[in-house]
Structures are given as C-alpha cells and as structure tokens.
Amino acid sequence: MTPALRAVVFAAGAAPFVALLAPWSAGTLSQVLSTLCHQLPERTLTVGGVAMVVCSRCAGVYAGVMLGALWPMPVPLFARLRPLLIAVAALAVLDVALQDLHLLPVGHARRVVTGLLLGWAPAAAMSRALSRPSEAPRAELA
Amino acid sequence: MSQGWGQGPQGGVPQQGGYGPPPGQGYGPPPGQGYGPPPGQGYTPPPGQGHTPPPGQGGGGASGGFGRFVPGIILGGVLSGVLSMIPLLNLLNCCFCLLNVGGVLGGLAMHMNRAPNDKVSMGEAAGFGAAAGAIGGVMMVLGSMLMNLALGALLADLYRSISPDLARQMQASAAMSILALPIYAVLFGGFGALGGVVGISVFWKDRQPGKS
Image 1: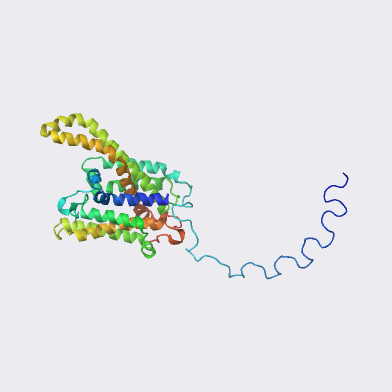
Image 2 (image 1 turned 120 degrees about the vertical axis):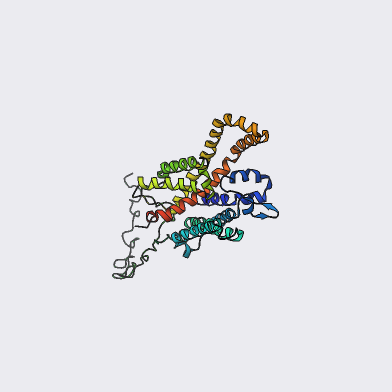
C-alpha cells in the first residue's frame, strides 16, 4: 500500500503540470481543476507563454504535494509535525486575508511559497511515516 | 529375523567412546560463565526508542486489519461526495479541497468514536483518507451527472434560448465528466490522504500507536 499511496498523492500533485507538458490534456484538466480552483487569469502564472490551469497559490500547493510525495520530511521537522502543520496553514490563511483585504498586492512569489509550504508539509509527513521503520519516528506530542 | 537392524553384536551405539560429551566436559557453558548478558548489563532499548512496526504496516490497530475502517471510509466518501456536489458550497473545495478533507475527517471521527480504544497509525490514516477521498470524487461526478440529467430537461430550453453554443458546451461538459472520472478519483484520493494525515496529526495525535 505504501508505494501506491505515495504514487496517488504524487499524481494528484502533478495534475496541473501534466497540462503544461501535454497540451492535449489541458482542456479536460482545466475543466476538472475548475472545481478546485477559481482560475482567475490575473492570479494565474504563465509558463512559456501558456497560462497554467490553476492559480499561482494552487500551483504552489500542487508542486508542494508532488515534492512531498517524492522526498520524506526531515526527522527533526517530523518530530514537531503538529505545530508545523498549524503554522503553514496559518501562514496561508494570513496571506489570503492580507491580500483580499488589499493590504498586500497580489504577489505570485508569495502565493507560490505559501502554497508550496501548505502542500508540502502533509505530503512530506506522509512520506516520512510510510518510509522505513528506522526512519519513521512517531510525531511527538506537542 | 531375531536380530534386527542395529541390534546385532556390532550394531547400535558403541558401549564406550560414543557420541556424548566426555563426562564432566559437556558442551554447556562453564558454570557461572554462561552466554547471557552480565547481570544488569543486558541490552534493553532506551525508553521510547524500542522497535515498533512501521506506521501503516501492521501492529497499529487494536482489532487489526484495514477492513475495520470500511464503515468510516464509506461515510467519509459519502460526506465528501455529497458536500462537493452542492452548488455554491462546493466553492470551498478551492481551498485545499476543504470539503473533501472535511468528509475524510468526518469519517475518521466516526471511526474514532466507534472504536475508542483503536490505535490508528499515520499510514493507516493516509490510506483511510485516500480511499474515502476517491469514493467522494467518484460520488461527486456521478451525483453531478444525475443532477444534470434531472435538471437538464428544465435547463435545456433556457440554454438554447440564451445561446445554442452554450447548450452544446453543457452537453460536451456532461460527456467529459465521464472521461474525467478517474482524474477526480486520483485528485480527491490524493488530497483525502493528506486530510487523513492532517487529521491524525492535529486532532487525534493521542490515538496513534505508542501514544497514551
């Protein structure tokens, strides 16, 4: 079950990037991902002149999920998983709030980074938990 | 026939010089110098560092087997699918697949309440979330198609009156839903797995194996 789980999570994270690599699939993926992302053009990254099928924050989330499925979380971070998950979620919510209250401009770099952390943390924690027993300490009570 | 195998004058175990150890020189350890650890110096793992089975690979559940999660998985999938097909409410899925993750957490909560002594490892929680999420994704697509079928007759005339192209687009999107079914299953399954990880880490951290 372990490799299959990581493969499913990786595939979920790779979905918007498949649309970039295989343009013939962009239409279907764009429609599917429209149920999971607002896809506003002004908040969407363009890669090589082609607009992505998700916004920049979602692109960060999906990239983080993909990376987390590939590389397990470092042990010291895994030992502090609960506060880490709360922190990355709080960071993303704070960025959304500040941006939508017009206290900060729409910045792709900031959106990508907060999204990346939000997607990476749970995916990398899952990979760590599913890795070898010698590398799989339990998350300590925090 | 009176002397069988090994019972003749030269058969069987020799009377002397046999295979046993010489008297007083047996193969056991010398008295007081056995092979066990010296008293008080034997190996015991440090507290909290003993070997435990890897998460998600057995040993975690009080009643064993992934099958114990089936009712929770079904409930989580139904919750995820039904919530995700409600118009306007489904916009919450734009925020880290929130309704899907919520459905998974609902199913996990039901399991935790049904089996208060069950320990759930993070790997099991991820598997739980993946299964519930995949069911939710499939349910959402099928439910949306049923809703389109039910409302399609009512809406078809409206779409045609607005624009024939719009009516054709609606038909095409309904057909595409079938093609997209496996993509939804993978997306919802993947995010459901992450929902299970978040749930067991944040809400039920004490219910992991090795935690009191």
